[in-house]
Length: 189
Image (cartoon, rainbow, N blue to C red):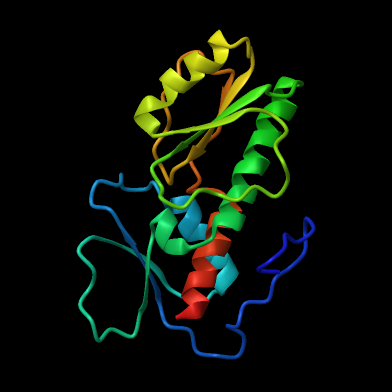
């Protein structure tokens, strides 16, 4: 499944069955708000099982020699552009379904050096901008005649300010596919 996208509801077996699992320690930036990752921790706990521990630690990294497996919670470090692209695409589809219409242009708000890989061609203009420059890109697309400009938020927890945008997707922290990307990194050691 790593090279292709699975059908909805398909299960991916991670190489964790039958082994004693070390605790999963998510290392997050110091400025992350307490509770911002509660949904992700809950999903990881469900996927790992009742006897697994999921802890969140702030930078700097915990001391070496621990039995825990450390996973930096950064989009680039997860190395999962396909999963995160699918997560963004799903959020776009939900926003469009709620509005009853399709966006006619898109802005990808990202600070990541690794862009997401979308599962299908998006079939409309797509511009990429740093989160603080999203409003400018929305204005450029609106000036070009696009009325329904959607912003895809490719960040963990930070909301995007996008005046003039038709729709803005939520940050990725609570998306189930982010939990899957973290588990892949955890399973890889």
